[in-house]
Length: 434
Image (cartoon, rainbow, N blue to C red; front, side, top):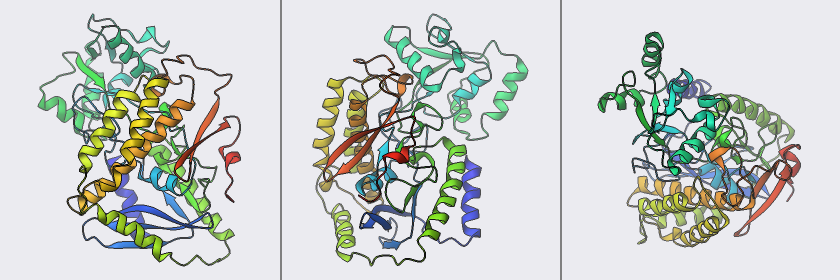
């Protein structure tokens, strides 16, 4: 992933694309229910931009920093901590439909550090064992440690609830050549997990390594390519005219592979869409709207409310306590109430500087994503895909009534919940003329 992103950036510059570095989008511009641009600011210089576009592509990733984790450090996250649902918030505020937002993804990480790479041990043959040394995964899935990530996470949670924790990844039974290969390749994507083991003097060749559940993120719905985010059609076009999405902020995603493929599809979709516009003229900027967005943001620099970190911590507590890996109608109702109440404090959130203003906007995105998640989770009265969505009051998967998408959209200040049968294209739920 590290090298891939660098090469993508280089290609953009080779193609003479205009790049606004250290710039954050905060608002989509629309007229007559059609998106025609965006408002953004540079969080180093404070310069504001109003940008016109025949089509806008959202590609800001998933929602992280959403819940508490084992280390207690929100930026210590399994996936990029700077992906905070900004695409989701901007699109939702513009009236676009979000889908699969009830599903979360979590994984197993080394105890106390949300590093990527633990599942690489499993793919090479590591076993998960509980405190009795029992290899337990076959109790939960016939594939054992090769079950879906969400099923493994749910099994570990259940073992803890049964009093069988802590849980370990055990590689001691593996042959030397496999262990050598693991040590040589674990650092290819990121060096973080090998570095953690080195600093903690942990040697997975010689001893079981304790694992824990990571923080939650809204992405990929616990199943590859069943993404959570903007509902899109087969061209990457959202329910909002001229608004496209690609990668982990879209309803079809799956890490680098998904981002690359859907990015290509959305690019072709944008090209075809722009050609259909036949050179139609874009609206003039709404100066009052742009000024309002700028003033609302800059007010945070003089506001006297909670700082962004304290506000964000409150959101994480609500998510962890009420919308985590075990949900019920009572807990979700509490979550919706407390998150809606917290929204009333957003306008007075305090930013100490321009960097803090960027964080304020990320924090708003996290809170809104959590509220959308709670509403969607309340609507889906079943459990599905292990820890991705488990309702203790509806613990079974209901294939008869619930093979459908939950669709969430904004109607003034309310959240609309609708449904779309999974046998149909998501686009069948779109009405871009509204």
